[in-house]
Image (cartoon, rainbow, N blue to C red; front, side):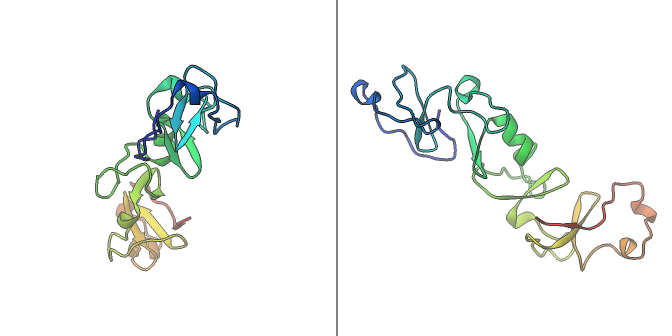
Length: 165
């Protein structure tokens, strides 16, 4: 098992060197018949687990995902970091190693997390409004929201201002 984003290949392991490999999970010697290689480390098959669901990753597939210090199975990666693995603004895929911005269950490339009106990037600490699937900076929020009138926006989900964390 190799982390798809790492690009590194495990060094060759011979039968004689196998007995002294150390597991990145438990720190114990790996003398098992099978071992896994992920995140530039060797693992017992029982020790490489999803940080969320604790599934043994060697048993459920041939890839794992890492982000924010977590080792994840595909399902938990998608649940935490995006439904489709695609940016909600541009539709392009988001690599597992890339940082993202999130709003209302949508995931964005950092460069795509912008105000719909002025196109300025929203960064952590900025206040924004998410209305009908569009992002607005504090300055460009729709005037209906400023005046407290919901008229045409009322039938659609409207959230008061939010803060990028």
